[in-house]
Length: 614
Image (tube, rainbow, N blue to C red; front, top):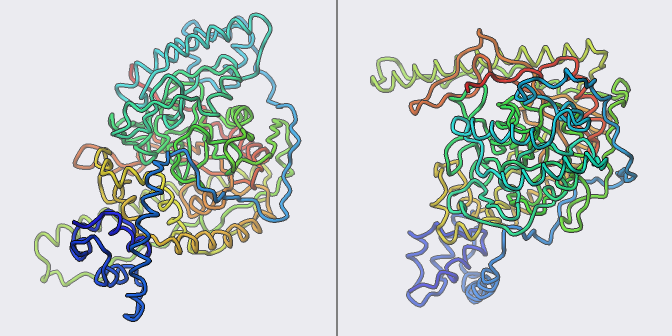
């Protein structure tokens, strides 16, 4: 019987290490468990690496020896948290980082009086962090009362919105009592003191399960607190819940169902920071922590109408967080207002001595920073409506079967509807640029350089496959809820076909892209962009920060979204939010947030919130 490691050895040599070859290649090995010439032929064909006959015998001894070294590595049972020795650094040579920390300068406190607190405490559920902070600081509202209110709302709306995996109720009530005692004693820690928050359930919390949203991990416990959790504890914030994420940080479907959009509960909340955005939008936490590798803060913030901050790569330590891609993962706040994001970021950023990617870069928030002095660009081509896609020339009508005619009619109708939605949503982008100009912003047209960014996406999937290598090799990937072509199980298996050489080549291309994108940011401090445009992949690869904020609600005249056979509703449609993205220089969050706050204050879209049924 063939030794499995020997079989993997030849495939690995050619960049084809996989457990997915139980057919032809597996059958080609001989009964003694040796790699054969036939295996080399087949693997070389798939890898598109021609190997001359005279070299094959020379390769066999080496290939058969590799299985021993692979076994040695597999035998280490490396945990998800262990990063590769190669560290990604987004900083361009010559770039100077500000390292001196200055005190947080938040906006003026809202006036608080005896009438500031509604008789029904739930009326403050949608208040911003800044507003809630002042109520708690002045002891108009206790942390205990606020915590109990948010816990009750989490319990009430979870059956509909499915955004909680685990309530941390006992921990929360203890921390809230401590906060009230400290504030009463004059030991006020700052604007997060006593405020309830939620953590995306890829952050470890001691004493509670950390499920990663995934089947097979439902009862996983990690006996540590993530650095971000520790820092929010130190700031006096009160963790009330571990919130949903799509399984292993993909989408909004987890082992308990689909997290819903509070604006339209027939829609998913998008992902993977599904619960963090949904719970924040629904007024069930003061703020939440999410993560982004490629859109996981941007997308649910858009769908749920929250304000999300994806910080620069290497600003917030990821210690204690599930690893998906060591060179692309970022942790960041999801809030109701831009300044809320600044306040939370101020509490969680900076080196922790464990995450080796984190820079000694300062984030100095100043709410009074004069945003009018900033150089502001906009991705002019991304704001243009793309040309209408022309369908393939159809067969003659007489040559089509009834089934083909119906399919063609459906495709034509779907394409027309997609175009109507595109044109409708485009008005909001145009209005945003007009508003910025009306505010006195001189928008400079810029464009990101052309590189094969989609090809560089192989970096993410290769790293993800390595992070969950044991899941694939053990066959436990079948426990994950979603098993379609685009879900992690298939992606992980397919990624094992990416040769190590090609992974390195993609990273070399990434270096070229980093240099080129940095040259664009030498001309401007902030760039305005549509959220779902090429910039999303580009800036996640280069590590630049982004703020995603609400940009209005679709009206009753909005094209209605498609209803699928299973009853799920596609994104968009009347009464649902849109977003706008602001991009910043690396570690330039202070300027980025200043302009985003100015736009948010001028438009007020963040003050709208969904009307939830009790």
